[in-house]
Each structure stands twice: as C-alpha cells, then as structure tokens.
Length: 239
Image (cartoon, rainbow, N blue to C red; front, side, top):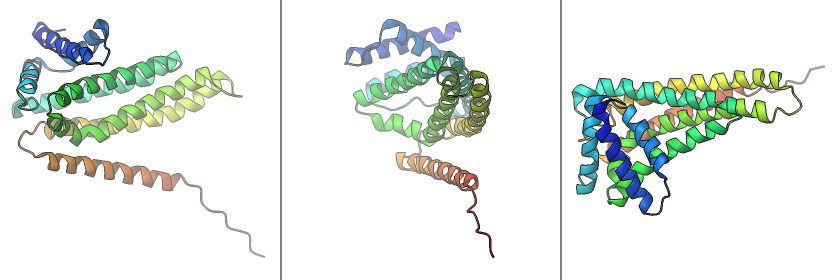
C-alpha cells in the first residue's frame, strides 16, 4: 500500500472497530482486510480526502466531497476496482464456490460498515445520497458475477448426472454470459459513481431519481431478454 494511504487505512480500521464495539462483531484481521481493500481502491489524492469522511461523519456534515478535477481518475479507479471484484468472484468459483461466497460477504461487510457508521451518527441519508445513483447497477452486477462463480462451483460440487467436465463446459458458457453482462453494467456504474454520485449540491430526491431510472432501464433490458428467450408458441398443423 502507498505510504500516503496508511493514515487512511488506520482511520478505516479505527472506525470499523467502533462499529464492531456496538454489536457488529468484526475481528482485527477482518477490519484490517476491509480497510486495506478500501485504501487500495483509491488514488492517493482521493485517499487523503477520505480522512475527512470520518471527521465529517463525526460532525454530522456529510460524505467526502471529491473535487471535480479528481472525478475522471476516481471513475477509472472505481471501474477497475469493481471489475477486479467481479472477476475475483467469478474466478473463485473454482473453489467450489466457497471463495465466491467470501468475496460477496466481505464486500457486503464493507458497505455495511460504512452505512453503519453514518446511520449511527444519524446521517444515513447522506451516505444514501452517494450510493443511490450507482448502487442499483453496481450491486446487481456484483451479484451477477457471484452467480457466475457459483455456477462454476455447482459444476464442480454438484454436477448431477453429468460428468464434471461436461458440467463445467455447460455452466461455463452460462457463467461467461453473466460475467459479460456484469462487466457492461459496471462500466456504467463506475461512470455514474465517479461523475454523478459525488456531486454535493444534488438533493437526495434527484439522486434517488437517477437510481430509479437505472432500475427501470435494467428491468426493461432484462424483460426484453426474457421475452426474446421465451420459446415461440407452437402452431397446430392445419388439415
């Protein structure tokens, strides 16, 4: 980890320790791993500003403000990090899905820890305003990648009446489609998270509207795919 990120890591660990002391059990190693992952995901310039997140939370002021000059860098870093998580969740399926589950749970803990911090300060709406615009696409995409990993795990652990080789080939094709879809969604989610989510002067209602639009667009896309995949009705032969 970059030396400039060390104070961020220490601050993250301290805040996660506070969450743990309030009834959410996190051991020291888990706290460190979550803090390390977050610190690595951020450019040095933005990592410094993350220290202000905790001060702002303590004072009830709001989420860290990312200057406009850093937002393109933030967007590219977010996309790269999210793709890394998605492909890790997918590739971990080779462990019969055990590591895939760990990746999903650890990322859920990361989000929950930050949400817990803000809610405990009575300012949950501020972190919601940051997460809402990109959250639908990003979380759905990570779940898709996790599903792809579990498909690989299922082929190894419960192939059914197929050979494991055949199960891996068949499930692998389905998993590849899921990962491709997850990659597509994460590109858009990263752009939204880098350019829209950090805007401090947008009200919560507007950011929730962005979230609703992404949810409707995602539903329409999935609905269209379901209709196309539906088999055509059979036409009875005429005499």
